[in-house]
Each structure stands twice: as C-alpha cells, then as structure tokens.
Image 1 (cartoon, rainbow, N blue to C red):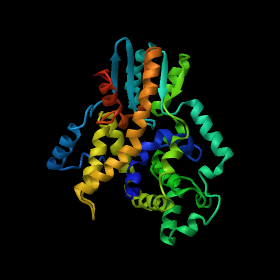
Image 2 (tube, rainbow, N blue to C red):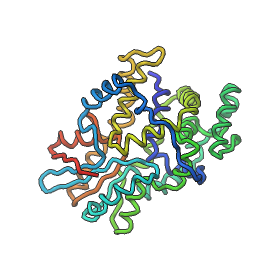
Image 3 (cartoon, one colour):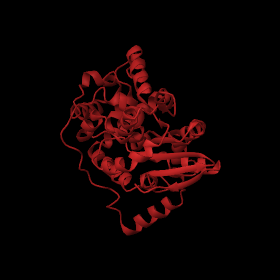
Length: 340
C-alpha cells in the first residue's frame, strides 16, 4: 500500500526526530506563519462528524497528564516541537512538576542529538545520495523547478538539494519558509523542558534510539520517497495553513482532532473511499505511533520504578487505543488529566 501522500501530511509529526537535522540547514527568520486554520473553515456538519470521530478515541483531548500505580508516579506532557509564545503558560505550570521529578524522558535528548549529528558527519549517505542519478536527473523538469523554488524560499541551494535523499527534502518542505526561523531557534517545548531539566541537574534520557528516524524511512522504497517529495510540492501553497492548523489544535489540547481531520478529508480525495482512507491511516498509525508507543512503555515503567519521572513527547502519541495513555491504563496505571 503506497502512503507517500500520508507521509506528506504527517511529516510535521517527525519534527522531534528531525530537528537536529533540520537545524543544520535552517536559517533565522523574523516572522512566524499566519496561515488559515483549516478546522475553523469546516461546516457545522463536518465539524460535528469530526468531533464524533475524535470522541471515539481514548484520552482524545489534553496535553498534560499524571499517571500513578502504587507508589510510582509519572507526569506526561504532549509537546509541540516548534517555538511559540503560547508555550509560556505551560512552562509556568510545568515548573513545580519538573522540580519534583527525579529524571526526564524525551524522544531525543542532547546525547541523541549529538549522536545523530556524529553519524551524519561520519556517514553522509544517511542524508545524501552517494551514488546514482541526482534528483535533478530523476525528477521531471517542472518538478525540479518547483522544488528549487521551494528550497530557495528556505535559503537552501538547489545544487545541494540535488543530492539529498527525497524523504529528507520532503521533511524540509514540511516547515513553511516563515517557520524556518522557529526551527533554527530550537525552542520548541521539548527543548525548553530539557533546558529546565539541565538547570536543575536533572538526568535526561531518551525513549528510543537516535537511529529511529532512519529505521522509519528505511521502510520506504525509493519510488515512494520520490512520490512523497512530489506530493510535498503539491502542498507548498498551503503548507502555512497546515502548520497553523496543527499549532492551533495543539494549544487547544486537540492534537488527535488533527489526525481525525486528515483521515476524514483523505476519504474525500479523488480515488478514495472511507474504507481505503481508514485502512491507510491504520497502517500509518502503526508505523508512526503504535510501534514506538509500545516500545516506550517498558522504558517509562522502568524509569518510574526508580523515582517520580517526567515524560515529554509529541502530543499525537498521547491519545488513541494504542496511545501511551491507554497503554499505561491497560497496565494498571490510573490516568488523570492536569490543567495546563
């Protein structure tokens, strides 16, 4: 089943993994994106169907939670990976919660980011095509011209892009030109929490290996990677809208609503049916979230046994039947939502 169009829609979900790579090319910018919130443009009927689909998922709303089992205690934070002034309110709430923790778990900590950069320096083939034709040769002229223009808007030279792996370029296109400065700043909620932990001398551990990013994209064929890149180009005119929509949904505590929104809208695309969209989204959820969530649970429980633990990861991992919260609940943890 080809899912390149779904990768284009969810490449923002990879920002926690991609940030160490994106910052290699990102340059500072003054303005932030002001795209249209696509959820606000829904009709009442569409909004009602979206609400119903969201409500069917366990723990569908909220970014901050507590989990307890016996004497073990966790604070779980769903994060948004780009800088935003709206994080300030959450930081005030997190300060006392982090102060009582004995360690912090994140998707990728400082050591993992260093290891990732080291691996890339030692093995450029992780991000670059080291043999065979360049993308300039592989893509139709019209697509190459569009890609060159999109990257120029992000201050990335086309001559450099010609030898980049397609999935990496598609991921770069996930970030609108007006948000490249936010990437360069490296002040998303994950990094702000890690900075708070460092100030307190709190140990920071990773939930997964730093090679997870490459493992995920290794499952894609070269053909699907090129299709992912081409479909990303089709989104270029609306990438700021998707970015704004995802950010607004996060700060409303409704990241799962984004997933359901894209699933329902995909079902209306030419050549799609609800069954096809549901099947592809189920497969994508397994790849992007379920497998990783399941692998995180032993790490989280082991940490909790050592003392109160603060856990921070992308907000989309919280909700759903195979979300982190429901997986913990199934293992006897009592889950309580905290006010942001």
